[in-house]
Length: 426
Image (cartoon, rainbow, N blue to C red; front, side, top):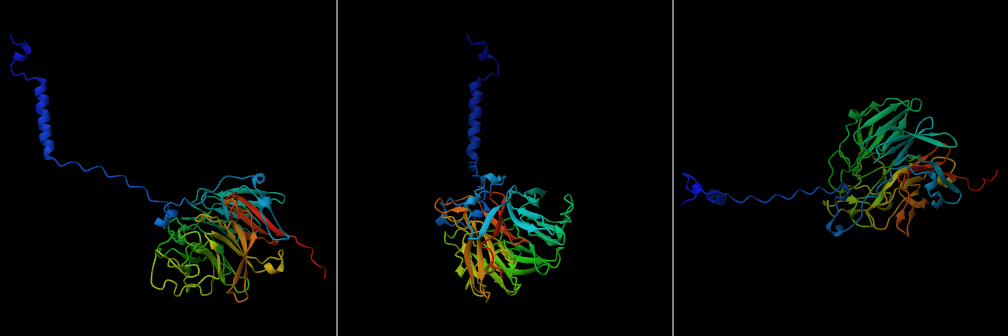
């Protein structure tokens, strides 16, 4: 007797429906092209500091040194390791300014300190036996540039220019925003600033190359000057990769500046440069085609790359990170330091054997065309261990003739003074 279910009119066994559906699906799929495999995710671009890294250095582990960016108490600073010439003394002047770089002195003696990575500007007040610091402004994009003129503090970040009028007497003064007046190019790489006012009372500002090595857009790889309100912009120097220190010769009035050499061409260089400008707006200093003492770039090429290039007066060593640059005009140091140049070399990262981490003194010949570089403040680097503990960034001569030196790594400022032998009575 047939099963009642199977005998029902119109009934089809479930497996017959499944087979029919499967056959239909196979037939449809056979007519469709196979879907392409999913595209692999695009890897993120390398960090800016790796740009220009050739295949011959692909395995290199070199990378910029991370800043400490936290307060270091004086008790943890090995000041006894620092060395200066006979008769000089170095001591801790202040602490508590993490990431401190460039320094500017106010008319009433307060010191203003810019930073890069930490985004702050500090004010330091000398209380005699101690120094107190406070944050003037925070959360800016690399506000390394600080300058002071006519009672006002000027702060320049990547994308901001602020003026604090009367700040030494009014800690809470609201800044005047001058950003629109200065027409700042936006890229960050090598665009942090060192700023200062010249003898002409104009504000001098560098705009570094937005790369390690490239043909930069028109508004980069140069030094400009402005009126204090941002008007009257002039380009006075072209062909510089990253100039973060400059000053004017006390006798000739000529503009002297440092320039940092490109990375990823090996431990030997190109070396950092000390340059002299004699014809503002009319000289070209080589970047990106010609480096240091006539080295043609192997990547960015052109015929006769060093033709017409103004060559450096002195070389400052390979990957030394030359920053703070000031002529000494005080009377405390011995007479042979008068009108000589002090340069802080923060120290290399793009070099296997570390180099720099010191302050050097540069004696310039009477002709202005020769310069001798000698160590002055050393001890931040242990050459045998190939390790450093501090990174001197900027120098600031003081009215009493002493000199302040900022340490970006430890957030400290050191005072270098001279006692030496007693002066003979006339």
